[in-house]
Length: 265
Image (cartoon, rainbow, N blue to C red):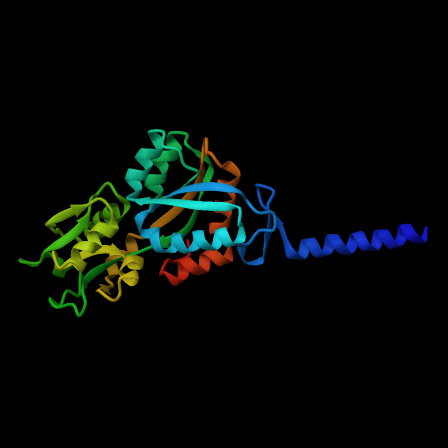
């Protein structure tokens, strides 16, 4: 009886310690504080993500691999609409992170998502101008001035859709000299001196702060994009996909995203 009593006490202590350290994820992986995992995920996890997530996701991928040494995260970054088309055309991947719910809907409507997509951050537009703002462009209306060369994202990509929404709210029409297929390309036009301004995400302007200034404008508040993420149907690494989606929502990953300028959803 005494031996049984002592065994029961020991078992209770072990269970209490396990509960304090973490809980089970949907994949059965035990998640510890900070988003790391004790039962490491293995294999390659292929993530298709909006180009505006490039810097943050590369860091998050490195952190995820440290927490899961048997796993390898590979990324493909592009405009969300391009990635959605690849997925619905059968491109093999495990996770999709889009820059707008509308783009994500293309994938889920085709039956290519697993479960309900989760919004993990949101992002807002700014006016990117060369360092020092040589043309003094301080408002959305200033971009419509004669002689001002502007780069915009194409309307079918999330940054372009957000731009159209902001321009409509301000009742302003801008004739761009170029329409780009993703926000990084639009920003590069400013960095290369090919345009005087571009409408880009706040996070992209912040990441390129050595080359450009980001000018805030009030109309952007009505055109904020939520970023959803989902594991994909037929994922080659379904367990890894679920683990990565869960990790994106962890405190560790959210800190990386906040440092990049993303806002909470």
